Image 1: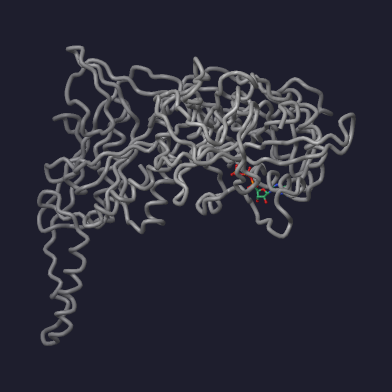
Image 2: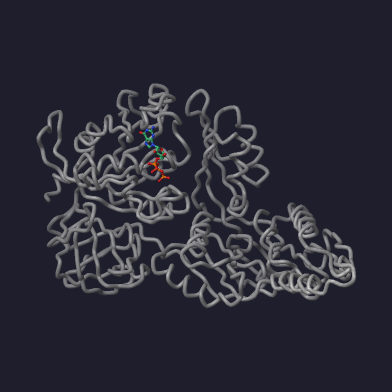
Length: 601
Ligand code: GTP
């Protein structure tokens, strides 16, 4: 297809504003999927995505569209719709999907208005110099207020309220007009058709049958079915087994030209060999320089994953090896914990990424896991000038160290006016510093903060929601690091440190953390035959203490005399219970105590 007949676009929206539903309607209207085959959210392939209603992996679909109205009426075009992942953890993938398009449909729920993710994605789109079409969705809802939110949107992007289109992804109203406007308003791709080939990878998915399927946007030149391709970041050369477009199933083609979007299959087995953001060129006639913007995925949050049943360790290792094939950002290495046994220290892009991986391990691989409290990566500069990255509290140097740096994020919070005080209080309590504050309309405020990543990975989002009755929304992106006064708090059980409970916290919060965990454990750990002190300590200094009093548990006391079978049953039951205990020093700790203590800090 000639570039002037192509339009590449994506839909950016806050979670649940109806992106997938709108995409489904477009597939139907362009007759790419016929109505009989249509199932809800056609593009969300993974079951887990469907259940959670979130989109993790982007997809690209090619749709033919003949313009219905206006000056271009009757013109036949090809639209490539690139689906962007919808969560903060995947900002980099979003930015690459955007970079593959000329235009973005900014979709806003007409009953909700602009949310934090709408803004964050809009800023990303504007940084990429994209053309934006503002669209209000769900106008079929009785609660929809298209007039009000058109004002808000127009104010935000500097257009007229009338320029905001109105659609319903559910009923299809306004969607044909939107497709016409996509052709009319979005620029055709520019690029050197005759130049050396350069294609940008915006997604890479492992498929059990085909190996890695790589989604690309060709920027310059042309890639032919029989070319040998080269990945410009690594120099690796691959035989091209197949090239084609998705519409909505893969369709082989002879090649992809400048401006086109499609997929490549080379037979590589691991998405790490075909990385998002990398530039693909032709080995025989390589481009001189790659396209800009390539970044290695960098884990931001670490957590220890341990099988509850120690004999599942090999299964856990195999499962991680499998998941890694499809996830360039997942990293892990073996780790041993005195309390939890053998497991893995795993790195994730963020908390959602962690939850998704953990859920997949439990669901797809049938594993029962304990995960330790997530922590961020600290950079420690010792007094002698040596420097190291700490991904595990147990590696945190004890005693006096030079300097410690923690990662920070730039957060955008959108909240109704009434809750500004509550949001500020929360952010200040998490060591945030206010960068700015803007009124989007009379009753909606945008707050921008720099916050330590470590302060928001636990329960920040839940707190934000509960303090604002669910009205506030949050988005954030990494913004470097800052020096901080951090200490490691150890929890000692009967004098022995329990590594799984060690945590790195700000000096001012250490006492609080110690008291909370100690009193939690005091309630969770059953009495033993001797007195068990639970202590929280910074180095050798004890900052909190609780005591579990001793008891002498005589289970047989309950059975008066004779009944031997009842006695045996009780003894067996006690033995059963013992199996699920972990020994920490001399103390028996039920598995549940670890899970409960580590679940919500
Ligand atoms: P994420 O993938 O999580 O970002 O969500 P999404 O933006 O893809 O939203 P999705 O399409 O899953 O829609 C969210 C909810 O809104 C679903 O329950 C839809 O049925 C509903 N919905 C979407 N579009 C419309 C619409 O036009 N009208 C009405 N009434 N409901 C809609």
